[in-house]
Image 1 (cartoon, helix red, strand yellow):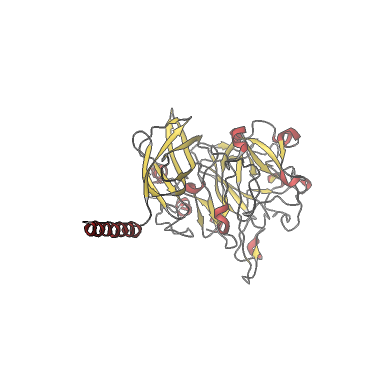
Image 2: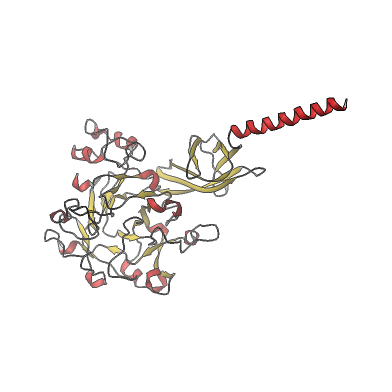
Length: 439
């Protein structure tokens, strides 16, 4: 009997070892989790919303049920959960965006909340930003004094942009840390209702009419409103820009950044600013830019000269930030360096923007807005004018415009384009190989 017992014990031990190996061969242990959409600390019942869970290497998508819950089966670890969608309420289109960090672990409560922030779509949006420069004619070094931004009227109604201003959020290279992060990594200014603007805010001159036609645009030269292609073949011609950031009296007078604008641009179209930061040029980072548009409800010139409207995070003016009321913000774009993507931190409140675009400098690329396919195709006048099979993205299969519509070719064909505006830079933009003003 004792011998039989030992034999049985040996068999059980072998079986146990075999099962352990079998489990190991099947890969990591997984857990069922639920991600629940919430708003105002309550469940948000919206069916069919795509929720994405990602650990930085792999990502998983699932749709919410009628209660706003999405189900996943994932291994233990740290993840980010995100969701973005539009919803029409009382005739107004709202963008809903959510972003939450979650940790999946054994014996833990694996139901997670994904808080949503609602924001309205804007008529005025950032259509394109060119800020990374290009290589010189010998392909030896980078030239970067040819930056521009395109502001677009994303509606069928003429808009008066005369009071609109252009600003930049926290200036930070990819090595920097967030100056406003709380113990959870969130921006402290979000709850306080403001967004930081760095170094200067640019506005149009008093009395200058800046009307943008339906589905029209203005090109604003950030540096050098001249024909840069006369010297650098890979660059752009900004001698025909509609407006130019040029105000040497402000203290932004670095000669290489601010050559005299082309004579084709009226001096009344020189934008003005007030330097409340440090340096002789308005910093517009070539990889980690964070431009945003604002429509102040007060005199912006008086606002930037009032010290009560600032918060200084430095011993000098390099960390002096204007406290822009978040309700003033029309649109924003968050860019980050590909080399340091793991260090990304959002510069904007969730009501303004979530998500970001990874940018590669020096190659003449631009960050270009994706087309809203459904809205664009719904415009009756566009029948027969839209051009498809867009192939202008740096990576058309992975990070191109999902609409497949070639916006610039369609515009040249007489079409009217509606661009995506979900207030999520990851969804709304892609990296374009050639600046649109070069066609």
